[in-house]
Length: 150
View 1: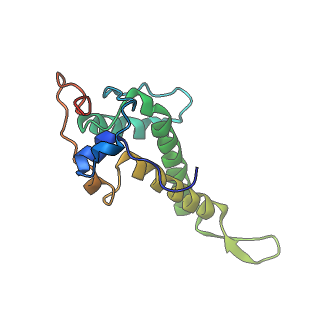
View 2: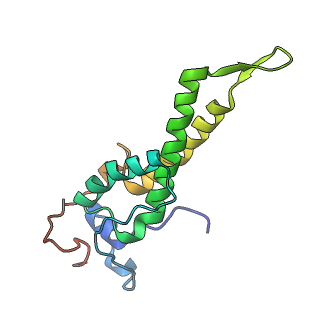
């Protein structure tokens, strides 16, 4: 489908842009929950998972349904970090067998990973420009989903 992604009604309500005549009354409202970290992630990706899951959950921005998007972000984060380490160790330029200098493939991997990471980060509210669009109240252990009353 072309165009911008639809925002959930809860997010529109928080941002103050909800119009009652455009509410999807059948929109799913998952409860905040920290999803289980997938086993297939690398150690670096699992470290990133552990770093951000608690904070996203405390803000009420993470549900069990978000496991795949979060795993994708963490995997790309680790790919980017690995590329940056290789660039630091081996340099951004390499010399070909013909004697020409060219950009290392790690530079391309790092750049592409950053592009993909930015998309994931925007979806998860992890960028400075995406955070002002969210006005979420931090959750307490006994508090229910803030979107359930909408």
